[in-house]
Length: 95
Image (cartoon, rainbow, N blue to C red):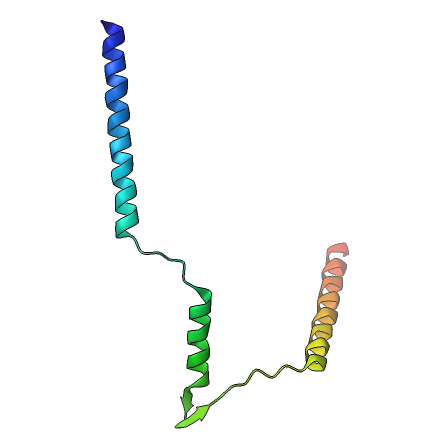
């Protein structure tokens, strides 16, 4: 008798747990908002806002100007600054 009672309780418990699980999953799927946004849409909106910004009733348009020599020069400056900063940190730790 005891074995049947234990098996019955196990089965009923599993059914109740699975029922609550599926109800929880259903509620989460249907009543929550997705927090992940498409980056392309977000960035295109920012670009539209930037390109149509009105300052003193003048429209400002930004263009993507890429100059490879300026970019490499800027990268080199950043690299040199990083080296100097790291060297300073090492010197402070040694002292």
